[in-house]
Image 1 (cartoon, rainbow, N blue to C red):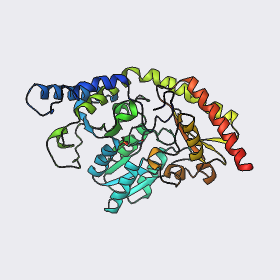
Image 2 (image 1 turned 180 degrees about the vertical axis):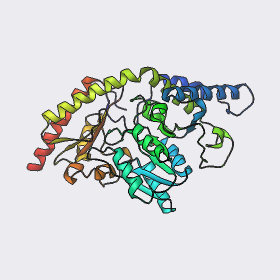
Image 3 (image 1 turned 90 degrees about the vertical axis):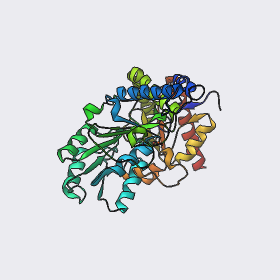
Length: 380
Ligand code: PMP
């Protein structure tokens, strides 16, 4: 690994916090008991899982019995969408773990409606109201509205509390995929009035392969698997104790430190935005993110720019990490109807708590030089 790597792809994943790793190690070494075992190292594991559950709950203002551990947000989103009854209204800009699940449900004859975003990628309350009035799905007596908190490609934030309020006024349930908000925004299930919320540990400096669902007390859904009684039968299988401990520690750190780190992230974001837009010709900001910034550089291929930055030891991404390997323009950029020439030049810069203003300076400087070089190459 490069010693001086500059990492600006925090929406794809984050570097694990050292304190998280420290807290996890004992559960992979000496305290390796099965959390269901009735002897001391089993009890130790069970106690650690319970502490983690308390910490996750505290971060989002939930009760511990409303938290269910999963392998990540993909699983959480699948459990919620497949487990709820009735129709489904979601948006065109969701992560594939919601969008593709919605499309698969449509094939099993569940009524599904997809909301269109505005030009910045925001899903507004009016579009939800229109869907309730004008779609077959929306006219059903019960269902689920699922709209993400912060878009992973554009950084645009959705008005989730208002959307939840509209869903409830039709006596529907509300779910939000809060992967890109948790640890960066103050997420409180009480003020959003969400019935379900999904998140992943590795986006907030915790381990990969960990995540959770918040399910409001009184709301019951079946899980995807049959098995033992772990996670109150919603998610059977031996608990990933070390992973859960790491997720819990990451949530505790976020609860104590995210206000300050998010202030710093936004300051760095503001600097990058201002510098790129004012000093690089034909640069456009797609969406209106503050820490996830999606730029297009007219005439430049985003992948070429990303690869050149990688050679300079700087990590950024084009579109979302999940669409790498596919040549096509991301579904989010298509959904906001971004001109093809701009969509092909799209580059996502996502800031995290370990970034500094010095790194931002280097990043902008390199992008300025590389865009000039790539444009000159095209004119010779
Ligand atoms: N939702 C959003 C908004 C995401 O950004 C991601 C990760 N790219 C996921 C869901 C899926 O998370 P995971 O891959 O950890 O299951």
